[in-house]
Length: 143
Image (cartoon, rainbow, N blue to C red):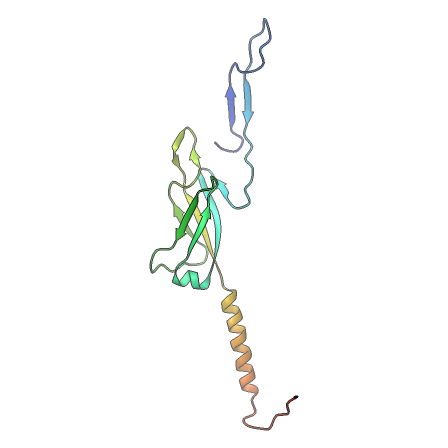
């Protein structure tokens, strides 16, 4: 069911002699989840991979809302791109009045490039150090 949807149970309210029994009406309020976001019948979840995983393949266990463990992995030879979405059919939310049909689960892949930036900084520092080398002049060192 969707956020704000109304559920009515006619004739289920308190019974009082010589009156018509009323109905009970519930309005659903969806609670935000820290990991999953819902859009209609689809679910969205974020996953951040390392650069090595993006290039060589990723594999991780995702604990679903009902505590099932899903093995999520890339296809052999697949290279993940930043902001890529991977869709998994029938792992979203159950559809209203069709409990055996489900939406999709979308995994939003982001790539952590910090390893590259750190390596580039180290390489730039090494190159700057090498350029400062005065070609064999005696250097003073502390012991």
